Amino acid sequence: MLVLLLLVTAWILLTLPKSPGDGGIAAFMGELGSAILGAAVNAATALVITFYALSARIRRRRRDRIMASIRRKAEHGRALVLGEMSIPGIIPVASFGNDPSSTHVRFEFAPMDTNPPRVPEEWQLLRDGRLQQLVAKAAASSVVFTDDEAVDIVAAGVVKTARSRTDGETVYQLVPRRTSYFLWAATSAQLDRELTEDEKISVKGHGATLRDRWGKWPTRLEDLNGLPAPAKLGCGVVVVTQDNYMVLGLRGRTFVASDFDADVSETRDSVHFVAEGVLPTDLDAKHVVNPDVAAFRGLREELAVGNDVGSLARITSLRRTGVFLDTERWQPCFAYLAKVDVTFDELNTLVLSARDFWEADRLVPVLFDPFDDKVKSMMLDVDTEHRFASNHAHALAYFALLSEFGLPELRDSLQNRKGLFPDKRARGATGAAREHSAESRR
Image (cartoon, rainbow, N blue to C red; front, side, top):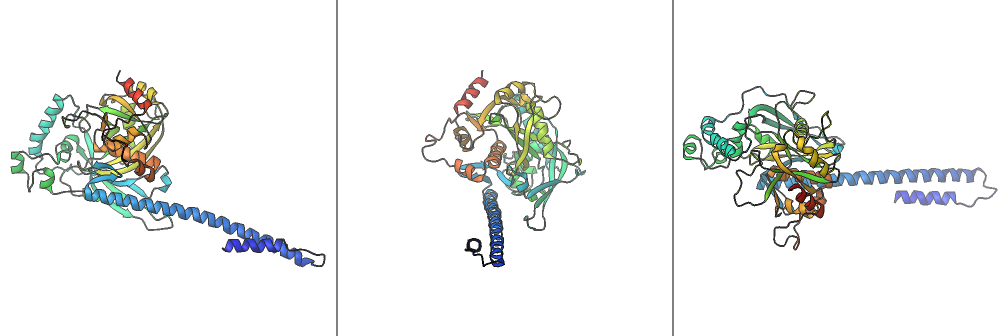
């Protein structure tokens, strides 16, 4: 209203009829009108800028409230739910959009804790019992299962910076410690396995599983403090090619993501993205553990892509898309989205020279579009050909789509509206993706 009043006043002053007898008064009125017009323009510009800034702030606040609601529901139900999608055991900690400057959450790693690994009292019994069974089962199924070093997050805290005009920042401070893959695999990765009679006698507490006996149900990173067994740090990367395909690998020869312990009635192929356990040697320039380093290592080892000498394809961008806690295995994980400068067909040819390509039997292309039928059917777990090999893979896809396309579009795409998948198992592959899949089987 004030701007309109200024504009009207300026127009009146500038259009007043002038006569030879007005003298300096007419000139003064003209200058006053010009000044008022300039003030009106400046005020209008300020209002527009304020409106857009306020709108952006309102949108961000609304998104933060929705994400907080999703997180609270996940903590309560121990599943990440959006629309009709449900990912069991996944609790989101943070999500990041495609603009890093809009992120108000930061993760800091302390120097490596030098204390001995976190070992449960019952470790000798579990090692001699279930670990030996896992080793034998992996060997019989030709699944790679080795006792590599790993990183255990033994403590986590949250620090909120003082509020300012930018709303401050939430900082997670994580304390890493060395552990081993076997220690984690026989304990935290087997929390819901029914105890044997010997284990029931030796493991303190009540209940049929380690989870019940230990009585620990972490739903936040801060809950990792004081766990009786390792919280192994992991990361995963969704790779998108130049022609906009997500690259999934048909997994069959790695421990967690393989099918050797899966439901025997499941006929669909299991697929995963690039997934890595963070190693104590994944250090950044500050000589502290950094999942970003592990993500680059995974891309180089599994797909031969990177920005160093010897890479067969280059990474045009790599960004974090989210952080989540897997309550099924007590694992904090960092999610990433990488874009590369080759097409899917080119990558499918180049990848044969990657060091760890043996972890995937073949590559599967899926269009990077939340409204693509194949994507929707996989996210809703109704696809007839493929399923995500683990809740980690499902979560990686969720965070990548959320980061790239935003919450409203992703939420809208995850509504299984009546008639879309009438028989609950939609094939859903686009023509191009189907051709790629057929070609990869030859």
